[in-house]
Length: 157
Length: 123
Image 1 (cartoon, rainbow over the protein chains, first blue to last red):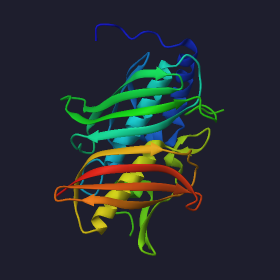
Image 2: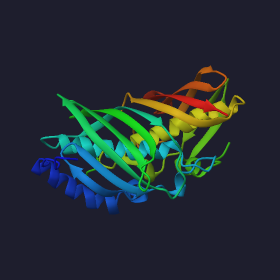
Image 3: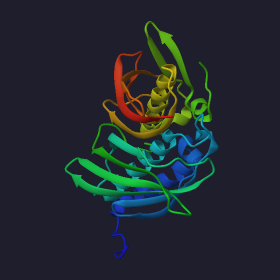
Image 4: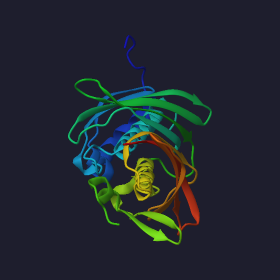
């Protein structure tokens, strides 16, 4: 990447920092996923994680459901990094292409880019890759609604 | 049918015969919460449940899903911290690919929350 990520809006940054501790320690699902930030910038985020055997399918490979859980989570966070003020968001839709299957215990990266924010809809694309080889596991794209009813996603009010 | 894989156990996944249809169920658990402030199910958890329901429907039809090619999901209404049920419709089962659609409901089947469609490779 030639350009360093531009700065996140300070209010959004403060919100993400306060959300981080809560999500890492008190949020049951995110504690299970144990997502580790690699890069967080304006409109982009990359996290690393180990695929837990708790999400294996009947064939022994990691079930695609874990991929959608991780992608939806990181996509949502990426939308926040692109926003100018703190508003609740919600996933409208998500399409995931499963390119190859991963084994439980594999180290992976989830990288997402917020491609555009058009009024109150944000468009995100991203992928899941093996950390060591860079081998592609899944590619995905999603749309998110900004300014939905209800309190902040992932935040305690 | 009870949970047969770690993901099925994690989701609290089960299936039952309801009239002529098969009904799939996600038994709500605190670990399924995405947004604790509004106590909604995580969108990815709903997608995982509907994908597993479509794979199970394929097996119930005597086919073996080898891999999922892709899944698309639309979240048409907000979800709540409660069980979800799913009905699966087979769009077409070909020689190498199968296309299915799953609808996820809450409020005892009164509230459509999400619709997913998947293309699965057959072994």
